[in-house]
Image (cartoon, rainbow, N blue to C red; front, side, top):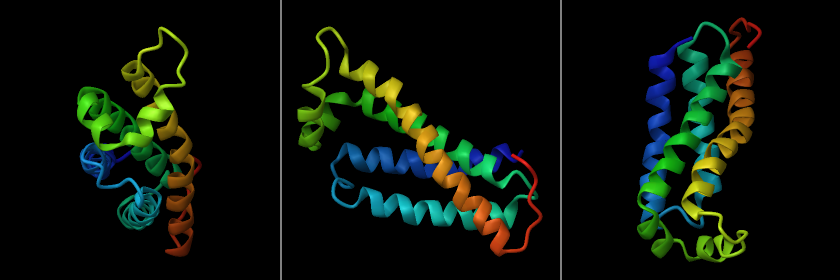
Length: 135
């Protein structure tokens, strides 16, 4: 496992988390993530010798952790710049902290998107004719 690469690529998650604090990613976030996942896939296929899926997966899980910590840590700023989230969090059951919910949900989203990022990396490795090892 190339942990330095996983950590370095996860810094895109930090950048996206900070950008979203200011509401800069609201309408284009899915498109930005697709571009980032394609970049991840290419970089992982080019710089790793195996376990491509796992590398992509772990980068995304770490992204989920970073983003949830940034959003929870700067909760007021995030809420003021992302009004659609205010509406979504108002539906939480009574007594559930929105900050805690963000911290819990962030890594879960990271796992779900990690499957996508991992598949992108695996496909990129196939396209570059890299030998694939099982996760």
